[in-house]
Each structure stands twice: as C-alpha cells, then as structure tokens.
Length: 52
Image 1: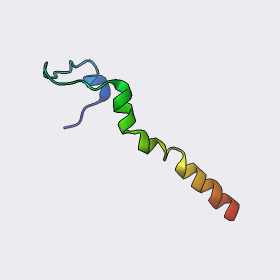
Image 2: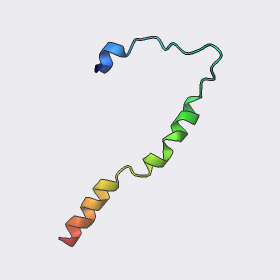
Image 3: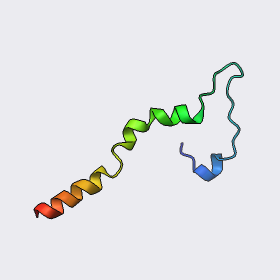
Image 4: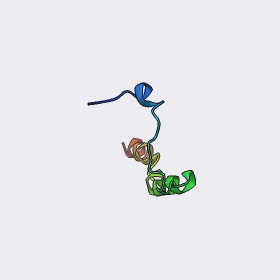
C-alpha cells in the first residue's frame, strides 16, 4: 500500500504521552553525515569532464 503525501499530511501523530519527543535540531543531526555527500555526484561529473 502506498500513500501520496497529500493524503497523509494532515494525519495526527499518535505518539505515546510518556514517550520523549526528540527536538528538531537533534533529529537533524542524525542525518548530518549524509549531508557531506550532497553535491558529490556533481563534483565527480566535473572531474570526469576535465579528464575527457
């Protein structure tokens, strides 16, 4: 089953009341290592254009 983002955007988040909700800046830091790869493929293309 797949969902379009438009159909689920207004759904309420049903979290447990005693569950810790991680702040946005902490959640973002989890994905920080992947940000280092942003633009990596474009740089590889630039190098390949220079070589060819």
